Image (cartoon, rainbow, N blue to C red; front, side, top):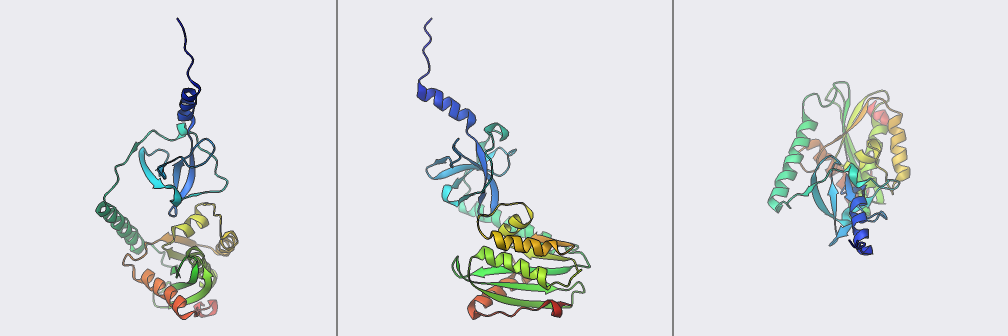
Length: 262
């Protein structure tokens, strides 16, 4: 019997299918697993890349390659470590809107639930705004003392910056303004800030600022960051957003100081 060797292209295709790996990437502020080629470049088909939200989740989605951001230092993940999956049918615009609204409502309810902030802790809402990205940027911050009566708020103009810088700086100001020794919970609608500050996300930009915010938080005890969706009817988050926009429109700053908080 004659054995006909596989053509080189066929052998390469079989080898490729068995080793096509994945890598962790960021999609619109959220970590995902993205399909890549053996050389580490995104495996795009028509400009779209297969992604998964968890290695154990068989639901497969497609994301535009331009919206995926590599995380420096991340190693390739073998294909065998990600379960086989099937692509999820693309949702209609109405379904997407309904799902988004449901997620926002759930996150807002958790942030506002009784006991979400300890009785002895300050409640902080911190937000950033940017006219263009980058562009004129500002931050807004609202602080409520544990007694629920003392309320401080203010804004700061940051000059030309990105929205991420404004969001991070707002959290930094919270760590500086809340009285020393007092625990506090910062509500932010920035998944990026929560990721780089508490989830180990590796950022290409803003590394010095991130280090400064981490240092300021490390010098405090009893702090916590909580995600709250923007423009979801959470009054104090809406107020922080208004203050951030006021900083941009006025090109001015008016922040309370730690002495005032004390």
